[in-house]
Structures are given as C-alpha cells and as structure tokens.
Length: 129
Length: 192
Image (cartoon, rainbow over all chains, first blue to last red; front, side):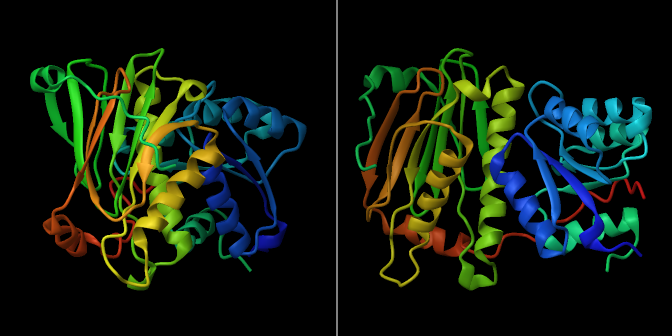
C-alpha cells in the first residue's frame, strides 16, 4: 500500500491549464512530488535526468505525442518499468487499443474528477495511504 | 475587451457561403474558405480560433455549469478546458501550429438579473485560458446585456456580430444550464 506522498509523478500535456488541473488533483490526493513537461520530448529528457514512478500523459502533443512517449519509455531499459496512464478523449477507443499494445498501464478519460484520478492511480499501484 | 474588431463582410459573401451552425456543446473545424460558422450566444461563450498560415479555423460554443447546481469552480475549469482542448486538438490535427493560433472571443452576456453572473464566469474563464496558454486574443466582444449572433469565416478570420434582443435565447439557455454530465469512461477497454 504505497503512500501518496512517496509517489513521483510526471504530468505531460501541451496545455498548461490541463497540467495545472492534474497537478491540483494530485495534490488533493496527497501526491506532492509532481513535475510537468509540455510535450513528449521534454518528458523523455526529464525522465532520463530523473526517473518517476508514474507518467500521466496526454496523447495530442507537438514534437512527440503520448503514444510516441510511451513507446520510447518502454524501449529504454532504465525507464521500462515506469507506470504510464494515458489521458484520452471519449472518442479515442482506437488510441486506447494502440496504447494497450505498447504497454500502457491505465487510461483516464477527460474531463475527469479527482475521485477518478485517484481510482486510476490506485488501479495501478494499489490503495494509496 | 468591448471592441469587436470585427470587419463587416459584404452580404454577398454571407449569401454565397455554406453556413454551419455551432450549437452549445459543439465545435467545428473548417479548412474550406466557402464556409461560415454561425452561432447565437447568450451567456455562452464561443472561441473563434484559427491558424492564418495553415488556412484552418474553427469555433466552439460552451456554457460552464453554474456552481450552484452542484459543481465547483474547479469543475467549471475542467469542463471549460476540455471544450477548448477539443477545438485546439482538431486544429492541430488539421495542420495548425499552436504558436500561430489566434482567437476571438464572443458571448458571456448577463441575460438575467440574478446574483450569479454565469456569463461573466464564462468570459473570465475564456480570457484566463487564453492568457495561460499564450494564445493571443485578436478581438471579440464579451459580456454586456444582449445576446449575440456571430458569423465567423474561419479561414480569413472575418467576423460579423449582431446584437439580438430575443428573450427566447435566454429561456433556452435556462433549460441548458445544468450540471455537466458525470464523466463516464468508455468502458470499451479495461486495461487493468
């Protein structure tokens, strides 16, 4: 049963508003170690510099999209075990299917609530304390 | 931002254009210069956004839920951000670049004499969102006391606005102001 305060999470989205919403939601459930990246390339650089337990990433982003980021993480041995939750829209079933092929751990449908955010994280890590 | 910065378009342009109405909760992205997007706004806000270099533009039309109906300010931002993201993502998908996007904002009127000014909430959200995301607001017309009819040529960025004195719009919005739907997972694929 991991402590929320021990989780290190990287939030990846090209919209500052969405990153802020996710960060606020994470803080609400007790996660304090939250970093942000504006696209897949920034995220990859950030993870190589300092790994995280979990990446919560949007799909539609410039440079390297969410699926590309997921593939890069799974292909890079030091990062391969990083948990990955994909942010999706309701109509993105194809994306969810493709992400599943590349080893996504869970997905979060926008717009989401803090309760759903917690549930999705707990489905990956177990109940948070 | 009371000046519309909207150029009057010759009526011929409008008559010959293919009109597509954008109703509340919808968005449209267009790359056809022969199309004009139209909408009627009360307290709702429409973002008319385009990339002038890519020749693609679009409009959304959203109404944030009234916090008194069981939602919080955070809920409002979440749903508003989602409405904006749908429009922006579709623009990017069709060749727009985020650093070239420009927007005109319309709507957010106060149609009722109530304490809760949901039009102002909608307008303030849209302005704050564009500031946060670094998308320049090149014009528009927000707040006031009248409904608006907006016609937007998404490729040229031309806009025509008419103020509308029609109480039925206010009555229609009253029916539409409700708690946003509870987010529902697609349920189609459970990964874990």
